[in-house]
Image 1 (cartoon, rainbow, N blue to C red):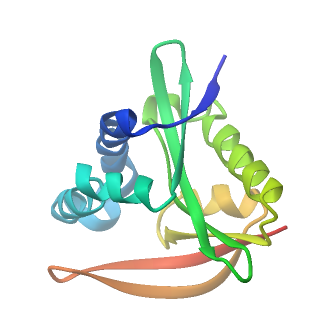
Image 2: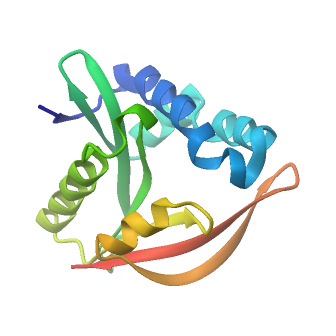
Image 3: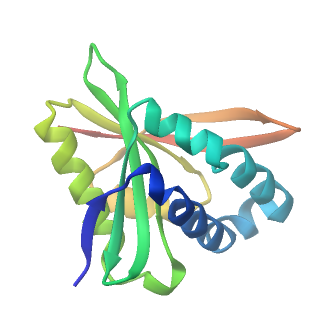
Length: 164
């Protein structure tokens, strides 16, 4: 049975390993290996993840026994409007189709709702099939953005939103 637990700083290496194992299948055909390497190094280095923990990001890890299958990371971004952002949600390719993503997103929904959140937003690459997962889950496309992330790389995303 899959269970969820709140990650601690000791879990940074698990988060990094899942991201490294997940990104090639999620993004290789969309952005290529060089951009994957750049983004993983930029967004998943130990210092960056530690900073996110310190800034109050909450990470949830999905596991069964000793095996971790995925994680989600979110935080509040608009205190006045009580808007939260899902920064990360990745499930190992070997665990796709087992409901792990659904378990993670539902738990994030519950946390945000319990905290009095008004909306949960996320960015998803326009060509990533995860977009359909979010649409099925009740998210709507709010806007289209192209974000310069340095080194000549861009993120061509939809901002999606789920309102509570």
